[in-house]
Amino acid sequence: MEESSDSTWTAAVNLISFATNRRIPLELGPLFPDEACIPLMIASAEVERVELTSDIDPGALTRLSEIIRSSPTISSVTLGYFDTAEKPQVVPALASALRDAKLLRELKMYSLHPSLGALNAFVELLDPKSDLQISLDLDAVANNEEELTAGFFAVLRRIYSLQKLIIRYNKIDVKAFSDAFGKDWRSLQNLELAGMKLAAADGKGIGNALESVACRLHTLHLEQNDLLDAGIAPIVEGLLRGYSNAPGKQGPLQKLSIVRNYISEAGGRKVAQLVKASPHLKLLNLSDNEPGSAGAALGESFRVCATTLQDLRLWYCDAGTVIAICRLLAGSYSLAALEIFGIQPYATAEVTRSISRDLLTGTGSLEKLNLSEGNMDSPAAKELIKGFTNNYSLESVNLSTNKGVGTEIADLLESMLHLRLAELDLTECYIKYAGSGTVGRFVAVSSSLRRLKLRWNGFSAAAAKEVCVGVAQSRSIEELSLGYNPIGNEGVKHVAEWVIGKCKTIRKLEISEINMDVEGAKMLAKAVTDVARNHNFLLIFAGEGGGMTERIRGILMTAQETVKNTLIYFI
Image (tube, rainbow, N blue to C red; front, top):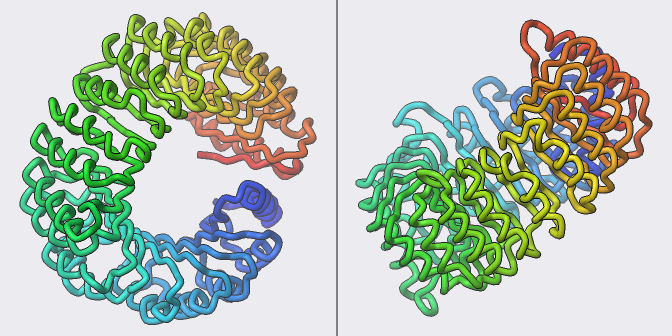
């Protein structure tokens, strides 16, 4: 990314403003290679969390190390994509600074290359800091089986304050992994082994390892493996053995995810045993499995955590499992988030009737509902109308990729008018021009809606105007996504006039691939420069193809340099 120093400085100041006001991490990567401006950036804002990537040059990293050491505000540092072979001189200085940092309480490291060298350097210097919470995310460290073996786990064992270990998309020596567990990891609370291609035969070794930390483990993620029923069984048994000396033979597990492990009924019943022994469970993700009739056993086990279960995810589960679990969750007063994504083979009227009756009407705590990619038809969408009408707790609804939603959009939105809805996702719902006026009127009258997604709805320029006029009248809308609708320059004119020019609350606008050319970009640039804002505004834009992207980018970046509180981000 080649920009003038003034342009880089403008972007830096805008990012500082976003980081400070929204309390998001300050990410320092390839956008800011200038070692002279980075210390000024850090010093000019009360930044609490900093993320460093290998794209920053060694000189800048050395300077940053000293800033971290003396900062009165930085409490969390994330190190990503560090290649110690390329920057061997940086590791000791950075590790020493982290050790001496005044307020540092959290260190996260991910995608370290080569992992052993980086870990050794940091472990030797950080062991004395007993109150430091260390999180390791080893995402695709190596592409071969030899990397994560006994030597690797021997280094890991020396990190006594390790609280979170994530190993994704690597192959491991399961025996070496199992041997690493024990009294050394007395702080470990979070374990994730995702995309590891763990097979059924690996279940026993993983189960033995988990037995030693079961009474401390709060989070266990085993997504995207090939454990099958035969591999899940010994893992559950290992955890239950670990609970055997605990009060009531119950454990502290709060989050359990076994996405895409191809478990069927037998595996589902084993998971039900673990849920039954986990009275503190808050999140359960069974996505992309087929527990079949075990859904009833799972639902029955939820009674143990009826006062704690807050988040249930059933992505790509069969309709029968969804219906069985919904019936048994009716009356729950803790469930706050439900994701039933991509119901197989599709969301029938029977499924949505159960969701509507048992969860929307039958619970008083549900705040977030995700029914995306359900391929529901018009009759199924009509069943949801009944549930929305009788619900008073929902704050976030995702109905994306459901053709029936577009057909019934008027009645659906009317049934939600009484809700304090903050977020609504209607991506790819085939709303088109026929439903655009209804959407616009809904946005105009809602006093709570802050985020609205309307991507891929086939909107024309006329449809865009209907929505934008409604957005201009909103008293609450902050984020709007209109990307991937062919609204063209005529539609951009309405966006510029009504959304950028007249909406007083908008903070984030996404308009990717809307068939805009240079003339449309000029309209946006003029709108951005004409409006004086007292709050931050973020414009997200993706390419238009045919060489148009760079021309549009140049126009918008020129506009950004003259405007305060505005950041234009190119995907």
